[in-house]
Length: 312
Image 1 (cartoon, helix red, strand yellow):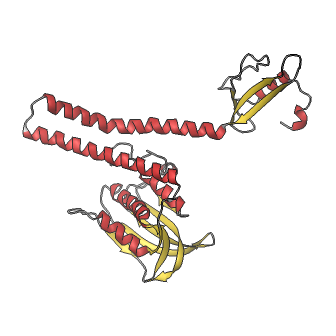
Image 2 (cartoon, rainbow, N blue to C red; image 1 turned 180 degrees about the vertical axis):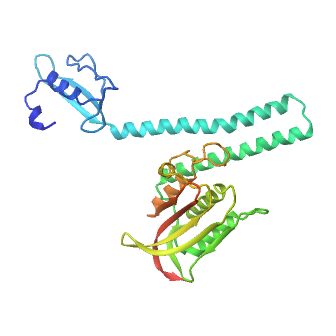
Image 3 (cartoon, rainbow, N blue to C red; image 1 turned 60 degrees about the vertical axis):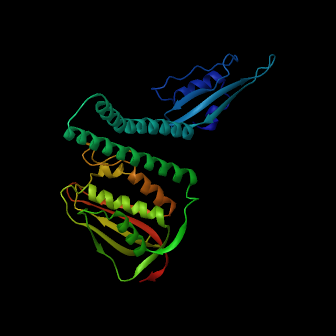
């Protein structure tokens, strides 16, 4: 609506013109010019683009005919509030599931007698669900800290990529674990400026996902390259698996909180791991590249700016 179309309109005509741009799903509130309502009214616009506004009217003192309409764009605030509500609702659901299981089996053990085999089975369920709960809460806390601090508490160091990879693999090594990572690394390794602890966490999440989403086994391969991307020299840490892969739709949602490519629950996880990776990479000025197809496995690359000349 051009400014020239608005000049000279009275308040009621102006309001009707605005109402014509509104979202039919949200009734347009009647404009009160008699001072009967001092509360701001929420307006939902559909054209020329979706926006949420607040409208308030200030009526001049008695004896004067002026009325001032105030409009405030609250689209971003509204979207943030919506996302918070959605996040809290989803988080509550995810927390309730393991809690219900823990509570239910603990109550059974307190109130009934079971043989040793049944007791061990129930203890195992309680232990597994407790671990799910601990992991979920830890991931939530990590996300909250990273977002709140916006990287201000990151401790950046100039490190060779090899040191980061070695620390990650050492942290993943568990007695009796049959998972192995095949390494393909160049003689000269680039150096990157990273928070060691946070980047180990990000790479660990990527490798752990490669294991989890390869239920039939298959090689998990880690390689390093150094290329120029968007006029920047970047080090790429590639993690490839031969697992179930992802559809384009799943790839588009991979960084959503609580989103899981396998919704059946057969593959353990909190649905927050890739959200954490995205937050950490963004604060490092890095990029995440995903190449995947159903049944053909997935390759995820963490691209980070090279900070120094290569070193062995």
